[in-house]
Amino acid sequence: MRTRILRIVVGMACSVGGMAASAANLKPIEPLALQRAVEALGKELMLPGAMVLLRTPQGDFVFGYGSTELGGTTPPRGDTHFRAASNTKTMTAAVIVLLAQEGKLRFDDPVSKYVQGVPNGDDITISELLKMRSGLPSYTAAPALTESLDRDPTRVWTPEEMLAIAFKGPPLFAPGTEFNYCNTNYVLLGLIVEHVEGAPLARVFQDRLFGPLGMKNTLLPDRTSNTIPEPYSHGYLYGSSSYAMSDAPYPADLQAAARAGTLKPNDDTEQNPSYATAAGGVISTADDLATWMRALVGGKVLGAAYQRQWLESLEPEDPGAPGGQKYGYGISLITFGPNRVYFHGGEMPGYNSFMGHDPVNDVTLVVWTNLTLSLDGQHTANSIMVKMLDQIYAVSPLQQKQ
Image (cartoon, rainbow, N blue to C red; front, top):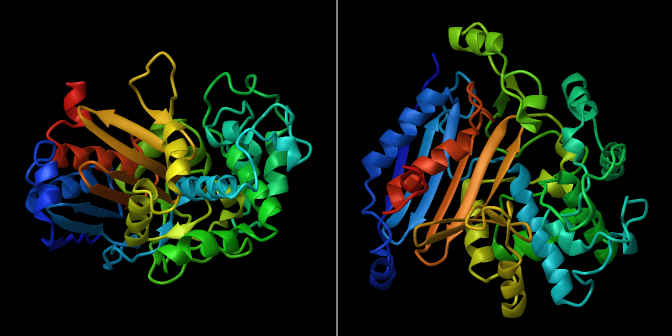
């Protein structure tokens, strides 16, 4: 039997003005209701552990559920390290925008100016890479990658190997004509950063982002490293890495065996993340990601003019649903009622995560779990995130669906 421990830390320091500005949109936040929601979902999703960090004008609420290791007793904390996966894209995009701000590149530069051998490279712009509108296929959709991860999880990958996998397939559409979430885009952006800066991406992240913001527990590890700094959470996934890379459902026999307790999830903690690099290689903590999102969305990273361009880059992922989710320069936006939450998520074998900030109501939410997918195919951190929003806002995404 797994030990499940829930920790609550509530800080009530807040400004009266901040609470007044949020009063119309936020519910009175009840720590016990948040606790019950996290605990119920944790049990339903069969999570080894989860971390919820919520900062609002009413206070800070920190919930560590379960444990950082299957069968363990150590609860997740705000300073527990985990693999942040695609939340890395916000950081890669921020550096690109900073380089544009400094005149070192332009958003309408073609990819071919910096990286050779990219299909349609003369026609794909940096802006289209940022907004997932390049038309390039994603290397993470290729069976060759997931088969290799399952066979040799400690293999060290290079960005060039990722691109070679991606470019075996034809472009999906003409540049700029459609949206398709694609990790290949951000591998290319990482190479562009290194070309322009003449330095490794890890050093650029540290010098430009992590150091100035005091994010002492965040890093892009060396390509050869399979380890995570202490304290850290193990990460789990049932079955092949392919389930974390695609939307394929778990087969019925796997689900039955797991529910019966005869199949345990794989421990993917030390799977080498070098295949993710600029698209998803960062290691962080809930505390640091909350600092990051509040600074990025709040205008503490980019200058005012380029902050506006960053915000204005958002476009509907589905042109037929202009009120739906939007994606821009490494950032997503969800709107429900009068509320706008800027966010990104992360998913890789072992971990699922969400980080978001609402600048109007001054709400920051970070959720991570150490089981990528539940047996019924739910992205586990996202499931908790939706429940949290329903506890926080007078109008929530759940209420809008009813």
